[in-house]
Amino acid sequence: QSVLTQPPSASETPGQRVTISCSGSSSNIGSNTINWYQQLPGTAPKLLIYTNNQRPSGVPDRFSGSKSGTSASLAISGLQSEDEADYYCAAWDDSLNALVFGGGTKLTVL
Amino acid sequence: QVQLQESGPGLVKPSQTLSLTCTVSGGSISSGGYYWSWIRQHPGKGLEWIGYIYYSGSTYYNPSLKSLVSMSVDTSKNQFSLKLSSVTAADTAVYYCARGVVPAAITNYYYMDVWGKGTTVTVSS
Image 1 (tube, rainbow over the protein chains, first blue to last red):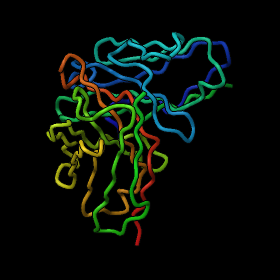
Image 2: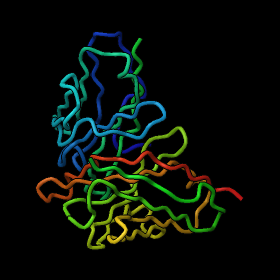
Image 3: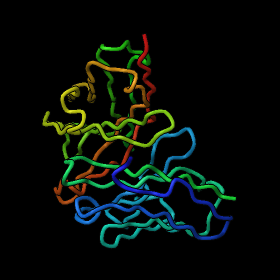
Image 4: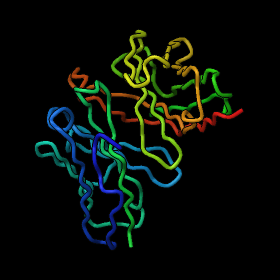
């Protein structure tokens, strides 16, 4: 059972917008920043969003992050087939004194 | 462009010590400012953070693994290493090394911005 809770799956058709949620508590998302990683099939995770809503260089602006209270969301607009991947949220947990991840959300582009 | 590459045995016997090395290219570990990290992913599962080491040798381990984990850094070879002792089948996973960033020196805002490709380690007799 992951400390951060994500839906196990999400799906949408190409061109549409999808959001992936990440729910935590006051000891993690509520007091620290959230980061998102994309893991394409058979590859290593890649940083997608850092510090709640910042995109690293090279990440399309179709990807956006937000945080409110003890929850966060990743939004992907203009869905493309290459966006089909697992998405993980992560944040520091003050109670566990460790970086914790969500269980991951498998995104299917129909 | 910084790149990281994990290396080490793909098979480790139960109760032995798992040893992995991460070689950094395109940048110097000793330049400071980054936290050299290890993360693992059990087969078909999510990600688990193991810990990190700074170029000075200071470390921070996940408390859940702290008694079994040891990390070291060799700045002359631009490498950092992970040792996990007394392994069991539950330690079978893909192990990733990554470069960690601590924005504004606030440890709780830590994230990993560059990852290695990962190496699969199987624990079996």
